[in-house]
Length: 296
Length: 239
Image (cartoon, rainbow over all chains, first blue to last red):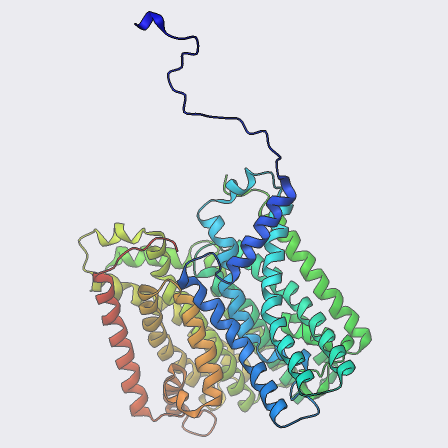
């Protein structure tokens, strides 16, 4: 019986077949990583518990805009009671907490559980991983900060305010929050990637954002009280939020948050803009360095 | 109640490698501001009280409390290595008590000492401002450490919850709603600072007796509850 074995004798044939279809390649992998990270930043595709915090913060961002719009429509105001560009400044604590909670979950877990090498076993390069994560974080922040502006804009049209003027101001607001998203996203990811341990990343992001803002506004108040008006506009260079404030005061026609309207003019504004761009590029550079040798 | 080995391990977890950098960053910032203010402005008791109250006590102490309090136990529960500690013949309330002592010590060293130095830089302890805020920072360290240590045993998102309490509840609601100030560690600590300075530079919303009672109650209750929580701890997987 055993001598009568057929030609195709095999101990196991469980039907392995080779794949000869199309390979989706690097761009597809990068897009997937981007969309998965962006969804993850709002808890989509994760457990119900991890949806609570981002969704709650998103709601907290939008509720004041809805209230302002409702008041404006009911009382038939000719102008919204808040400028588009001021909105993110007023709610910066919410933005900071969102960034501090979501930046670590985006990059720290991959580092902590040593899954980064698995990503790099796919056809993606280091730059793809960094770009996808950076882009996803910035997009998530943009969704968070631009949605209330959209509500304000729609509300202003419902209240029959001047279309052209409102649209122009809405556009300026969008440019401002786009810059803010890139800057904050970069800073958050750098801090989270450098401190992968749970909890410490959150604290590091919050510390950098809140402490620098607290320190800068304290110093500005003191410079104002002691008539050092010239120093105020240079002090703003030292915290992310005042950087954005300075740029939009100089170029986007925003009312400044600096004491006594001492925001930078166009000349100093260029320095602010350069500082923002340098920080965004610097964050990208640091992230690229961070992932040069990782987890192996 | 105090276990030196647990204490040594906790110190190493809190201060090891890069983690101590965050802890040095904040006091460094405070001293920098204090020096800048003194250089710009000269010695001024009111400005000194503003800087110490607004920056040191309102921002720095809670942040260091969050890092030290949750950092003393959170990462261990998180990566599961707490089971090696729990399987040793050490009482769980002892573990909590030891970790609390370490967290309090770290918070005090990194918040109260810089506050005292900054106070002396700002106005040479005029009107007892530096000492008053140092007392407040010491007292607040104890309550914050106990609260955030409890958070570390209760939730995986202890740091975020702690930050929301410190930044949103105490800073934001505290400045908008008067009632929120009664339920704030910062105000309880300020009540003691007010007792030390004695005049109008430092003011608190709550009376001294209420403040002391609440401080002791919160600290003891949080520590006891954290001990209970650790007795029946279940390790959850990553979400």
